[in-house]
Image 1: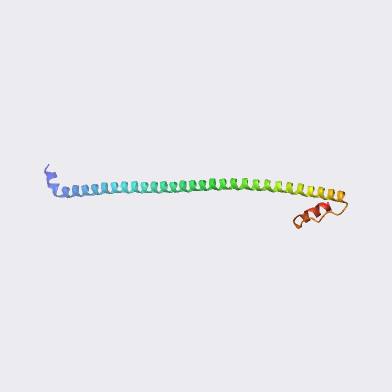
Image 2: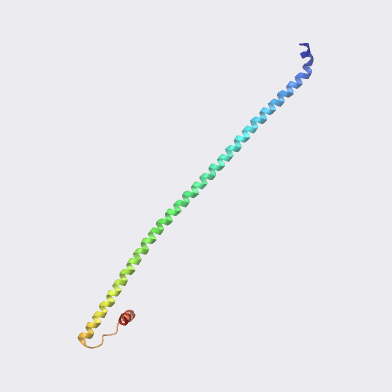
Length: 132
């Protein structure tokens, strides 16, 4: 026991130093844990934010695509309608030219004189029919 008491002036600072080093190591370890946890949290938050931005961008792109598809469908229906109108006008024009020819033949046969000249608007169509 006397040996321990005689070593007290040496052992007290030694144990104090070991306590201080142990405490410093515990503080360092806690700070390292907190730093790593913060880094992981920041990394996770960054990826979450990136994913949310990507989802928003994808949603916006899909919305734009849907809008463009709807506009395309509308335009396609309009083009089909105009094409059908154009076909009807062509059929009407062909029928009108045929009717005019029948009337000219009738006038030539009945009056035994030449038919009057057609108006300038339809003269080319009638001449084309005469050449066929």
